[in-house]
Amino acid sequence: MRNTLDFAIELDPDIAIFNICTPYPGTQLFKWAKENGYLKHEDWTEYELSTFLMNLPTVTDKALKDFYIYAYRKFYWRPIAIWRRLKAISNFSQIVDLFHAFTFIMLRHKMGARDIVRKDWVEAKKKEFADYQIGDVNPRLTYQLHYEPQQNYSIQPKS
Image (cartoon, rainbow, N blue to C red; front, side, top):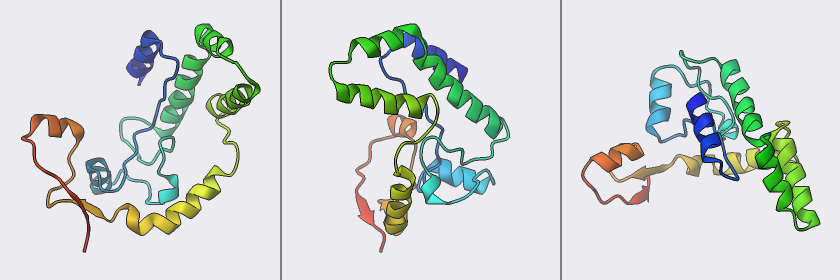
């Protein structure tokens, strides 16, 4: 985690996004987490990139949460990052956008009714969400696709 943050600071992009590894249904990570008892639950409304969904033996939830918040603050509180953002403001709506981004990133406060909207969407789409299979093969990780022969995959709904 620390290496990722240090690398992001070294690259010095305008925007960096730090996410929590999320075991989405249908992925090998989900299968692995479920088989090994690391998966906390299957409440699809919590499946986003900032929620801790696995009980891992190597790191605690508190350590993940603390570092997740630390990474955003360390990256965006750098004077050069603040200066670049302020220098780029050209109208009032950008000030409003920056305020929303600040409250979300720095204070971890979610503006608006995002959670309610997400919950309604997930409940309506839950059956469709994990109901697709890629041909007759098991899902594979991206790095596996680079090292294994190319195959023609087509996404088809399960019967």
